[in-house]
Amino acid sequence: MRNRAHLIGSAAYLAAVIACGGSDPAVPAARFANQPIVWNVDDHTDTRVTPPAGAGAAFINLDFYSRSFQRPLIEGLALRRAQRARGANALDELPDSTWFTNRISRQTLTPERVGTGPLEHDSPEAFKPWTVRSTKYGGAASGLIITDVRGVKYMLKFDPVGLPEVVTGADVVANRLLWACGYHVAEDRVVYFQPEDLVLAPHAMIKNQLGEDRKPFGTDDLAHQLAQLDRTPDGRIRAIASRWIAGTTLGPTTDEGVRRDDPNDRIPHELRRDLRGAFAIFEWLDSPDFNLSNAIDVLVTDPRDASRHFVEHYRLDFDSALAGLAAVDHSMRVGYVNSFDWLAVLADTFTFGFNGRPWQHPAAPKLRGVSGAFTADHFDPGAWKPNLPVAPFDASDRFDQFWGAKIVARFTREQIHAAVEAARYTDPRAVEYLTDTLVARQRAVVAYWLSQVAPLDAVSVTDRGLCFDDLAIRYGLAPASATRYVLTSRDRAGRPVAQTAAAAAPTGSTCAAMPALALDHRDDYTIVEIVTTRPGSARTMYVHVARNPVTHRPRVIGIWRV
Image: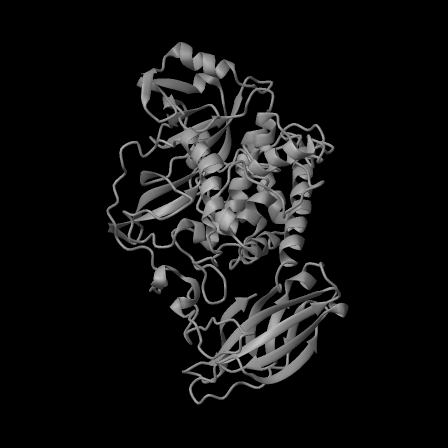
């Protein structure tokens, strides 16, 4: 049975982060309930949300204006207080929810499983001909809405002319890796077809950007659209077939506030850890497109009870990844500045354009399927930007990005390679280059964000003491020989009790002698301050320990990073 973990509107810290009167001012006021860690959020309460009129419409231009002009001015004047993310459990990790499912973080995924990703059904390539129902709507890429002979609905999206395999390949690679990270994504796959595999439905329509019928879609219209596409030597056309998500589409997921008609949506989106921490993941993939149409809410049926329904949240359309957007827009600036960037405009104004442009660097090799802008050279994880300002990213902090970087770090080269192979690139050199570049960007992301906090993980109390993994050592970013830990136990009020010290183990997995617990005749609630020191660096985190009321053995009940 799922635990309820949205008290005070958040799964974070089990509603136990409270001010502790009279505590040592050097110790953060966070305190935790002595209870099991929550790994499943109860956000599946039955709801009957109905889609508003025009739910499928993503008002791209209005969204661009709001995020690029209106919001920066308002936020600049508001002087809002920084807030920690919500939605994390007491160990500063994310439980499973309708937003996120722990996969690579808590499961063993083979490279083959990563390559398969969200796919659960057979490819529509085996179920031709396809019936064209309408043109695609929303977004900039051309496409079609089709059904196969089974009646299954798909969206077909194509590579722009002159960029064969670039955006279709990027979509699948990012789709597989984001699925493995834990996000809900559609079933996207690369398909090939001949023009004669398409049959127009009797009432096929051309849609406008809002999803409204504009005029009938005739044979000449279809022929004209297909004539704009690149072909393989045998005349086939390559596309992404994105299986329509089962359920009722409710419209875009906003990046601020909550859905007022969904009782399960209690955390303002700009404060969600799964959205804030996604920055480290999307910059790794160089996937900067965050238009309204790229995230949707879907009302789904509970697989365990057909009478119940709840809202799930999906990420869509990853054809901008691997610098695909830079290739489509013919702009090397993508990923370095927003589409309209106030700071870049001011910098150019006051320096007359002589302030240096980091995107003016050597391009990627000219390989079929590879964007010329996708490199690891000059990639700065602290400076990457999406195409539009994103409220959760703007509100995020180094703790959010540490969470995201930990997920990025877990991918092996073999898993990344499998995700790239899933894109069916025709040039093996492209597969190797993209894999190498993703591995290089992965190391940059991990190195940067792990240096911003005490990178200690998997903390537990055992018979050997307080054990933890130092991720900086594990991933070869810091030497064990120059790393030392000082542990100070403190009572519930933050007063010091005892102190021990330990040197780092060569593997990064260290067990330090546990300093004496604070004896308070209840559960011996103890705060263990761990200071990790290396040459030129000292980082602190607090591990909260209490005796299990059943076994009476000490256990970790919370982590607070500073």
